Amino acid sequence: MAVEALTDNNFKEKTQSGVSIVDFWATWCGPCRMQSPVIDALAEDSTFKNIDFFKIDVDQNTIVPAEFAIRAIPTLVVLKDGQAVEKLTGFHNKEQLSEILHKYA
Image (cartoon, rainbow, N blue to C red; front, side, top):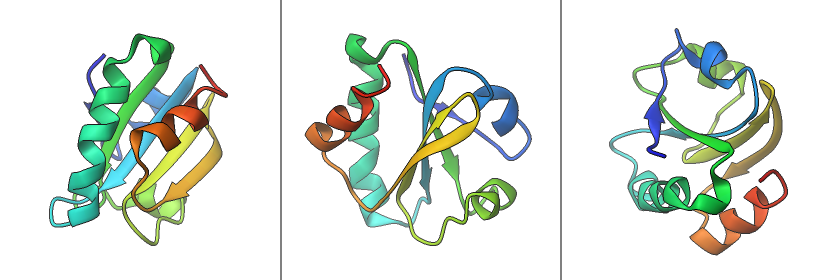
């Protein structure tokens, strides 16, 4: 599964059911650019086929990041049926994220 870009307008619709992970990022953010390939690799891993992977650019979308009190990027939020169950700030490698996502896979 590919990582889908979200906006303030479609965020709730896309994350309201099931398990999803959302990468809050910005184009100018170096650690965000390091995090993206990790998220892409996990999205392609069949172990996590029941998890939806999303990204939202905090510069182009300000409402959702404010609702989740995003103060630093990258921040990853794991949602279950639209409710945040985990919030991770800073770069996380594939092994770290895989371990966290296994709880929800």
